[in-house]
Image (cartoon, rainbow, N blue to C red; front, side, top):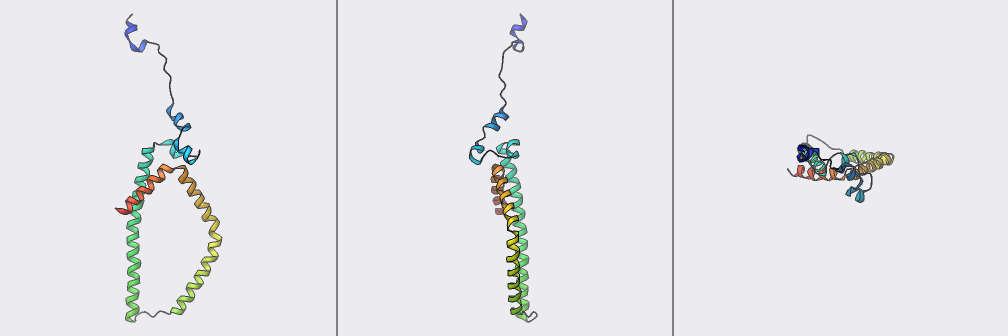
Length: 151
């Protein structure tokens, strides 16, 4: 009689619903972007993916901004020093030789560009597949990247 008042002793039947299996079968992004939604999309929640993508994007954007400023300053300063040296007479530029070397480099690049095209196309296809499989993470990365550039 004391067992009837105890809720643990009652034999009620509960249905166990596996939400992870249900979520794998009914993904909204599968209907939008196809069935291969990728392993990251199955392991982490949307909020976690956005946070991971946003943080890594912000870091990449911040580093890109800082390195870009340093590189632009160094290249611009180098050109400025060369112009000052040229104007002062310390440096003499043979413009015909420069033009000849630039044309030679253009021909060389055109030959190499035709050979490199298949590798570039393969890389672009792989990158596109990765972005499609991890659309939430990728969108978080892009947003974070732009925030990193702005900060």
